[in-house]
Length: 478
Image 1 (tube, rainbow, N blue to C red):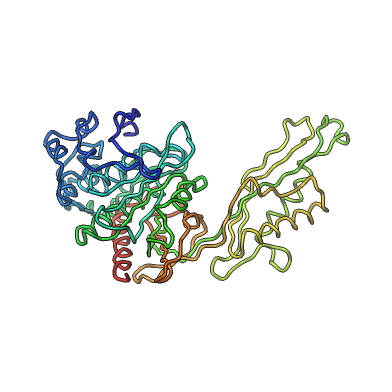
Image 2 (cartoon, rainbow, N blue to C red; image 1 turned 90 degrees about the vertical axis):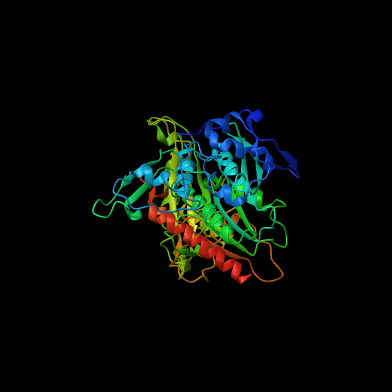
């Protein structure tokens, strides 16, 4: 597992300068020979690393993996998705024969649980730099796990990005190693639908990251000056700090320089017309500790919180006119999940404190409106007991349902219940009309956070074509 493919020493990193708070690495620095480049690259490519002028087409082909991949370089066509049919192909041979599938493998093999994104970020940044992108490593404030983290923003030096492709490089825990297996032995061995790729992040969202990168490279072969930007952020799974840092920076100017933003998440290759909003809070109860043999000498916080928990749990199924949370024709009913309850210190002690963590997926309305409904429900359930209350300060923010664009033909359309970075990117108005926002990607959310996370080679390959179709539509519209 190539998590340590680079030294942690800053002296081993390519030189860079800081401009307006962003770390910008000149292109020539990535072609200086280092211990890593020597170990990663065969001798045949070392001379090309020393060249100050390297054509885009050459980098896209022979150097695709030689510069950035920790795996041995093998002859590959520049953007080959599938492989020549052959009964002798092993599963590893299939991946090795495709720069796209190899890149996906490499980033999945680098563990990047939220807070630990530095190594995969460096890998992706190096890869994009080697393909003539200007790469900005945008610092995200605050260390996690002792690491300095950064977003990756990349664009071509010759153009100002107007179309932004974005996804996230962090994953949920735990790390699950990359693996391959054939899921249908009755189909031909060269059928991409028979090969399943598994591992943490293979779907959410490194499948989208890889497909977006190679859709962009494919487009740039035909339109070398296309105004594309790539943004890969940290922290999406645990709060969205990465996207918020980008959103509030000078890289996201007002009016918006982007007329189209394409978000990458697992959507089963469908365009998403919108997703539910979200609101989090804690339900708190206070009591008085006492010996369990004399419970009347205390007040049980757990007994006090139970009626409120029961009422909150039913708010999604209660009609709005009866005090419940709202529904909508598009998103269905609002759902409530009581995910964690904590109370007491021991079975022989009356609990003095109880707490529950609650997540609400909003089908309609605003977070403020939902907060008021929840407050009233807790008061009614506890007969106005001031020692039981909803604390909304522990989960800041929240957002209403997000409506998205689906005007590009040729895709199935659906809604989803999960949250994304869509609301964390502030879209500034443009004088020429609204900014289009699309949500699309390979794989299913139903396996994304499970121990069976995975998708087929066919899904990955189709995602490259899908992203290319969305980019082409944006170029034609402009």
